Length: 265
Image (cartoon, rainbow, N blue to C red; front, side, top):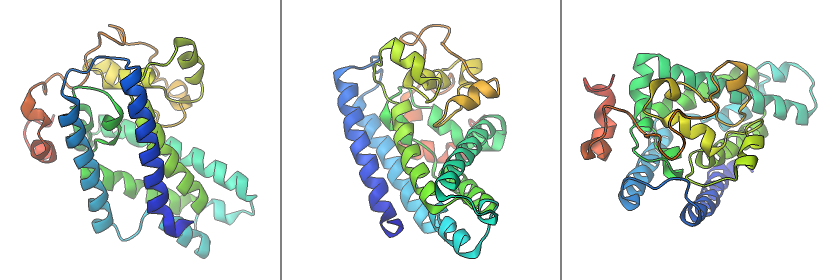
């Protein structure tokens, strides 16, 4: 199974993408302000660069570290004779809370915000926004996951499931789909819904600095970063960053060099 991990993840990605793309077309939550074809081309180009960059620069990936840690007995969970199912569930929860804290760090540590702001320069919000990350942020995020897997000895199955689920929930939480309000309300007690996460992409700073959760929505409620609704409502809220509203800010090359410019503040 683990030897076919890239194929497994790609199948998850493609199947989720196609289903959500159809739902966005049939029942969009908001009217997009930019050309979908040009945005999709750029955002998908970024995720292709991210994949190549990670494969070329990191000698081991999280699932590889999980297999090695299990063989060598490294990490907290490998120090105890836990049933496999419990170890996997604990691993999923541990990874998710660290991704929450990583996300908070990306917003509040200036050098990391330089990398993460590319994700927020998108002027619209749909499934491709969920894969729009600077390659250096992907390297940072992957490195943090490798360290967490090593320290806690998270089982390889847990890492594989988490990576697959995170990929799918990232696209879902960024999708431009319209969920019935009652379903959205109840889902938020467990998962991150599009209406919940869209608030995080508001140009209003107090809204942007909320709703950091990736998979489980508990963390925002637990740590006081949950916001239920945007001030202007879902249809009227403005997506993106206030100082990046022109066409140039949506150019692929410009986005890649943005963290190293004086505008990245």
